[in-house]
Length: 475
Image (cartoon, rainbow, N blue to C red; front, side, top):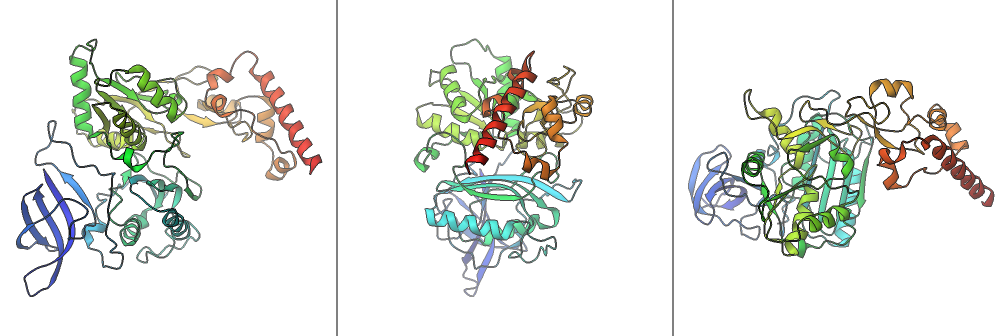
C-alpha cells in the first residue's frame, strides 16, 4: 500500500524547510519530493496523525488497480490534527479534489463530505459561526482568491462534538477557495477528505444553514468510542466484485452475506442495487433494528450502502461495536458509485445499481442509469420523478409524471391544495394553516392516496384551520 502525505519538514540541505510529498509503503521508508518533484532524500515517515511532520491530508493509493487490493485507511476518521492554520498552502493541498467536474447548467457544483473527530462545545459553536458567516451567499460578487470573502455556498451543514456532515452547492469559481478555507482553518485543517462530487450539478439549495446538531438522526448518542469501530470501506470495483461473487455463490447458505439498503424505504423506490434488501423503514433507528432482526447471527457478513456514505459509516460502527464481525460498506455511497458508472468506458460491465439516487435537496434525485423502477402515484404510468405537493401545508412527497403535474398544478390533486398553491404569499399569511400530515404519512403517498383521501385532506385542513384560528384568537 502506498500512502501519500503532504508535509512540512526540515532537511539537512542548509537547514532549509522543504514542503512536498512523501510516498511510502506503510511502515517502511519512502522518497521525499519537493513541489517541483525533485528528489531530495530518503525519509522515514510515520503514518499516524501524531507524527512530528505536520500532515495536511492523506489518501491511500493502491499499487495495483482492480479487485483484491487491500482496504484503504479510513478517509473519514481523524483523531488528531496539528494547528498549522497560519502556514502557506501548497498547490497539492488545494488541488486534492481535482479533477473537478466540468458540466454544470447554472454555475454551481454540488458536493458533500463528512468526517469524524472530537470537538468541544465551544469549538463547535465557533466553527458553526465562522462557516455561516464566511461561507454563506451574502453577496453576489465573489473574489475567489480571497478566502475570507464569503464563498457563496448554499446547503446544509451539521456540526457536533463528533465531527461534521455537509451537503453543499458551491459557485464553480469558488470550489478551490472552499478547500483553501478548510485547509487554513484551525479546526478543519487535515480533517476533511476529498469532496464527494455529485453525479449531476446545479444549485440544489436556496441558502446556507449551519446547525449544531448530531451528524445523523440516529435516535441515540453515538460517541467517538463507537465510531472508531469502523466498517471496511469498499471502492466501486470492490463492491461490484462482492455483489458478483454473491450472485455466483449459493445465497441460501447459512452465512451468505446480507446486502442491505440503509436508506429510507421511499428512497429505494426509484433506485437500488441488484439483490439488495430494502427494509420498509422510515428512520435511521428503524434501519438499524431491521438489520439486527434480519441478521441475528453476528458472524454473517453484512454489506450496506446509502446515499453518500455517512449513514453506513455510523451504522457499520454501531454494528461492529455490538459484535458483528464483518461489516463492509460502499465508500462514498451511491453518489461515488454513480460517478464511477458514468466514467466507465463503452463495453464495460453494466451497473449493478439501477435507476436514480434520491437526494435530500431541490433535485430530489440524480440518475445513475436509465432504468425507471417506479410509477406515478396519481396515474400509474412509469415515472421516477419525486416532487412535493405545491401546497406547503400538505408537502406530501410523491412521484408525479409531467402530465399529472400539469393536470393537478403540481399538487397532490385535492381542491384545497390546488387552491392554496395559487395563492399569493400575502394570502397564505392571512390564511395560515399548519401541517396536514405527520412525518410518516407525508413520505408514504401509497398510504395517503386512496378512495377517501380527498375527504381526509379536507377534514385535516378544516381541523388545521380551526386550530390556527383558535391560536390567533387566544393571542
